[in-house]
Length: 231
Image (cartoon, rainbow, N blue to C red; front, side, top):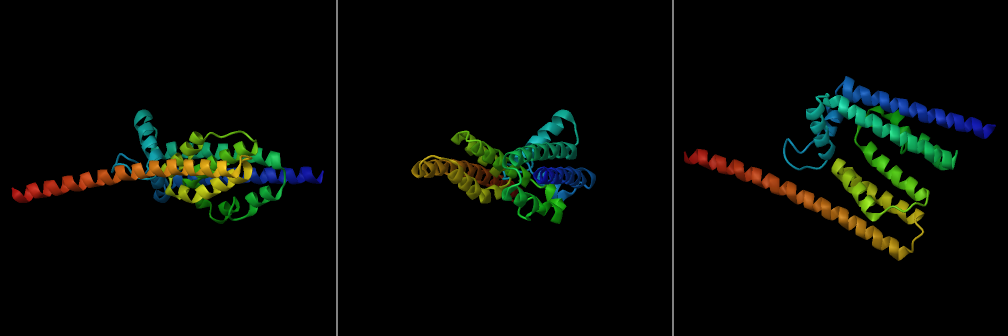
């Protein structure tokens, strides 16, 4: 009976956190149109060439032009979907682990969901996508299901193109892999190096494209200025 009561309380806390996330996302993105958060989601490739963080902003602008739905509603809908999937998977993890120390730490510690109570405005930020991708990866390994290298690489590349902070979460991904995977240590190291090399090569190519674009812009401006001076 005591365990059942604790489970109900933890389930209620998850529901409260979910409602807080949806409510504050609406406040920051739609009601206040907070440029610090909405503007971050809307960074795109259309207004200055290739740049980090621009992947989803370009997608939102494309959908806006296609459907004529306001950008703030598109961003809010996407954020709401992310949080819905995130909490669904988190509850799934809780049902597997029950009221373990892991669950309690996720709910209460500032490094986990407790931060949402300390500063609710962070809810509308882009990091939720990184957390969701990591949670999906963790649950797959927890269920002892094989995750293909290409899938992990795509997840990391999407996360990096969404927010460069994803670089700092790569050690968590590797730590989870080393703990949860039963492959020999040498195989793990080789696989990890292969994935990370692929991701960094992709990012290096993206960075070179951005530098080339900026250089061509600067060259065009310089050429135009020289023509005007000559005239």
